[in-house]
Image 1 (cartoon, helix red, strand yellow):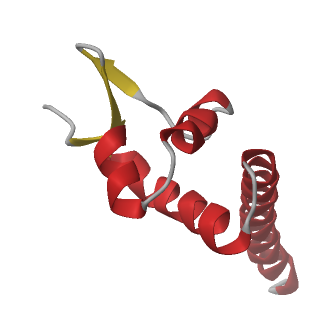
Image 2 (image 1 turned 30 degrees about the vertical axis):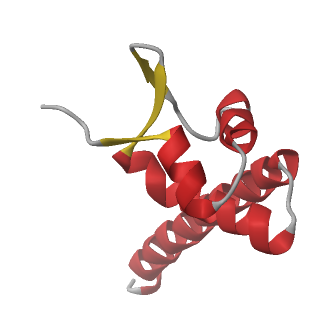
Length: 97
């Protein structure tokens, strides 16, 4: 099964951004880039994250280091929310006694 991909050039043209921005996101490990026959591609499953990072970059002026920090904090919040949910479920078991 093949994954649909878009070239970095196409993405950057559509969003009117520099390819260096996308490459710096890949350097930071925030997105994955696939190189096929000398062309760089972004897998379709990465587009949602890339769109979010592009909005932060273009609309809010957040650089790639800032994007990495924001993503880390959001991931931590999601983890903590799931942990709170699990703890509440366990607490309900004990409250039932």
